[in-house]
Each structure stands twice: as structure tokens, then as C-alpha cells.
Amino acid sequence: DNGKLREVFKDVFVVEGLFNMAPFMHIKRTMTVLRHGGELCLINTVRLDAASEAALEKLGKIKVVMRLTGGHGLDDPYYVDKYSATLVAGPGAEWNAKHGIAPLQTQVSLRALASGGQKAAAAVFGKIQGVFEFETIGKHAATLGAAGKDKQSGEYAVLVTNGSNGTVLVTADAVQNYEMSSKDESISDLTESWLMGPITWAMGFSGRTMVAPLFINMSSPDKTIKGLQPDFERLLKLEWSHLIPGHGFLALNVAKEDLLKHLRGKSRLGPDFLLLQAGADC
Image 1 (cartoon, one colour):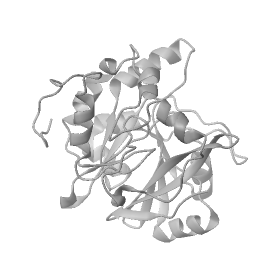
Image 2 (spheres, one colour; image 1 turned 60 degrees about the horizontal axis):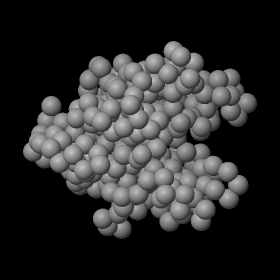
Image 3 (tube, helix red, strand yellow; image 1 turned 180 degrees about the horizontal axis):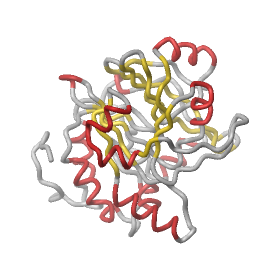
């Protein structure tokens, strides 16, 4: 199942779908669609029903499929195969054969875009202002991969141009939001299964613009948020206002400030973490 495509900013659309974890246990996930010059970039792909796919096609030609983290590529093969889209992902990303096609290969590296700055990112898709790599997570993933323990491809976020309305940050798992400040932050009427709601809440997937404990445990070298502090210091020095996460609600206008408030919690990085003025640039 999926909700309807919704334009949340000019040429920035979102659509929410369900992912089955197990029988009677499904969670919500969000695909972000960027439009520029009649072409589309799909981030965190979600397979859509026929009517929604037709609506997607009316928006423009699907040019780019972008995978921001290891666990979000299930539906990439479908879009790459059907629309001959350019596949953008982190180094080491792997896909199982789906929909009768061979395993995919990354065509453009997110790491190269992150290091190449705005010009490199815009060359791949004009609406993208920049790509951010969680470098500590990437190094940790590479270490695990070398030891044969994991084949994750790191974690990235995308900065999306939004004119005078404030830059949009699109994430996969690193930053999520499970608390709305207004109805405008709801993406669709879809709901998680009644079994998953209590389970995800008990696992710490709750609260405003946050970093989930499970993500920290899986991604941090020391399994604590302090191990990821350098990444979040860099992220919070960038200019952005809104959040579209791979899971959860939108966070509008003050998402960056909300994330800083979350990280300054006593059980996280503490009240003295990154004492910067809102909107400071790196």
C-alpha cells in the first residue's frame, strides 16, 4: 500500500508506503521525489501502485535513483530497470536480483558527490545543493566490511535547494521524526500495523527530530551517540531548515534546531554540545 504523492515544497514531493517486516508487522517508509527541468530524482525508493506510478510519470522523466543507506534499496532495481535511471549510491552498495534483472551496480558514487561539493551534486541532478556523508559511519562500515561482518554502504543525506524557503535535508535512517508540530507534517493517512507501533516505540523510535538508539547501536564505532559526534557537528554547521526523513513525519522550519535540542539531552551529547547560533554556516 502507499499514500498519495504530495508536493511539500516547489518541485519537492513525498509519498509514503508500507514495508512488511513480518506477517502482520509493517512500518512506514517515505520516498522523496525531486523535479528539475522536467526530470525526476527518486530518493529512498518505494514501489507504488499503478495509479500512483502513473501520477509519478506525469511529473516528469525519472532520471536518477538515489540510495542513501544500505537498507533502503529494495525497490531501486524496479525503477532502474523500467526507466533506465542513473543509480547513485555509496561505495560497496549491493542489491539482490529483483524483478528478473541482474544485480545492480552503482553508476555514480555518493562519496564522490559529497567530496565534490555543490557543483558535482548539481551536475547529477540540478535540484540537489549538496550531498553530506556521515564519515564516521562510513569508516565504521568499511571496517566491518573488511572483517567480513557487514556490507553496508555507509550513510548519506541530501541537501535540496528550496529558494528563500530554507534548504531541505533528506535523510534515510540517521535522523528521523516521530512527533508532529502541525498537521502539515503528516505525509499520508497510512498507519503502521498495530503490532509494530508499540514495538518501535519501545525501541526508541519516538520524539521530535531524533537519532534512534537502534541506529546508534548499529552505526557508531563505540555504539554510543558520542561515537557519532563528529558527523553531527558537521551536519549542524550546514544551512538547512526542513527535514524529510526516510521514516516518520516531516519536520518543518526548525528541524535543525530541533535536532540540536535532541542531541543536547543529558543522556546524549549534553547541554554544551555545539554552542552555535541558529543558522551558522561551516
